[in-house]
Length: 281
Image (cartoon, rainbow, N blue to C red; front, side):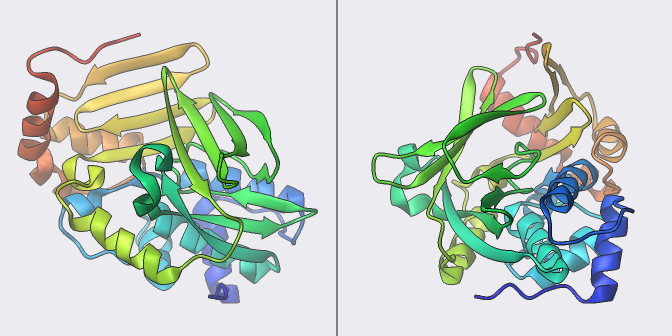
């Protein structure tokens, strides 16, 4: 499916949303600036999944949510809007289907992630929607980069797919992809599964993630983490009121109805951790 570009008015609204005031053109400095601004301004979050609201892979719906309603979202929304904005500027953009943790979950995971291939002095992997873990475009070549404070690597799998990995402390998150146009029905099917199935991690627990300068902010349930190059600090959120304040102050999300999720968040935390406190490092 060809990427439908934003209109001039929509592009102006998007650039204002991410706080990018400089002139934009189809070149690498613009591409780099847009991705960096996007992941700072628009958080990754799954509040709509938690609140039982409908979600799709439609870029127009994502624009209404992320830009007009000033919300965050997940990969289908982030990269849907970003891809349409890049196309409006004149970039050659391809939507790609990917499988998160495919080495563990198999090919059934394909479609669990949407990322972008952008032609810009060569092929570039562009991804503002993988938990905000990637902070800049990555050339489609084997290598390793530091997107402060997280290390990012790109390599090949045994079956000739590409795998991007991001280290988060002792663990790593990854996804596999082929540099070819996505199967849009596959993306839609996995979007529905992740939004509704009890086995989906997005159904099981609240998450919000954002880059803030050299800090990476992550909320998982009632555990708030701040990651820098010096390490990770964790603490437990104490109440529904504090949850709403953290979402507003750290993740730029004005969603007071998130307080209604607090009983489920506490129950999930108890099931996972019992009475032990959130560890600190």
